[in-house]
Image (cartoon, helix red, strand yellow):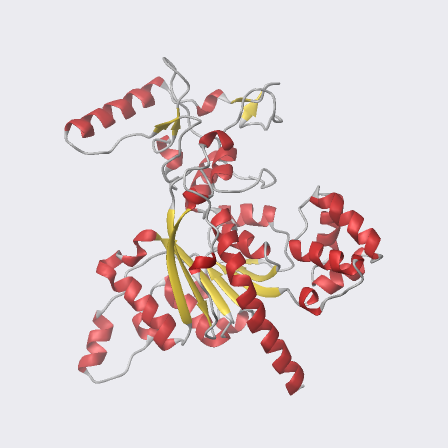
Length: 411
């Protein structure tokens, strides 16, 4: 429907694909994909066309684009959030070759996917308005800092965070000075290394780099049928009126697993190898073997007898799942789908995992099941970051517009 609207609006606006691509800053090839229905058009493109049809090329619409970089990109979950508000990704870094494959399949860019960010000089990263990163969590060593203190020598983030992947985020922020950033990590970042990791991160961002910073733990269960808590850190170069109260979070557990499970009744197209036959039944290969099912039951019983809560998570269509993890490929134990009395449960298919993380069925999965399970288990829940990006957007735009005005006046 969006693609039909796009094509119709473009014709009504009387603008060629090439001219529209030039206005938007996308390649003509990308705009052709929207026109042909191969990908959903960006909202920024639809907004511009609507304004043109209404007889206005509103400056705020034309200038609504901003640039961002995607670090520790995974399969592009964070990027989807910033794409949704009109952002244009100008640099991507992801070291895992299989994640690179999935990312490249789903995002057709005019820039290559760069590898290990620790090997990339800041001078090789283009200027950008927003830095986006889901950096891995590592402890910070205090030995070097203590030694420098004893010698009366100064130290900053370049020393204190050296050897950690956060250091690479910090050095890019320090040299590129983007208008804003958004960082994502596991909830336990706040307590990691007895709180020292988070302390160094906040000190670095606020005191060393001079950004105004907000953080919040958000449970993806507001948007998807899965408990998944992540900490979100948002920062702006200037003191903007950002407020977490602007988030629109649906009620928790309103979404149930039936929303993401294959209906197995022929109402959806068959997608081999995940579903087979005219009814699009889940492939038998996702059903646990007798041996594995017996092992998991025995393992759970043993820990229950010992007073521990470890065990498998057996769920049905009306339930909410535990957190999907990168180890899901091993036995699927955290989320097993109940198939009824006397039947072994099954794993989620990779397509169901994609849905559980908020990816639409247009998201392509070019890798093996094992790699797909690891990728979705490591991903963010897309709708959470679409919402975070939404409340960041007006502040990003204000800072970008101010900068553009300053350049005009200086020129």
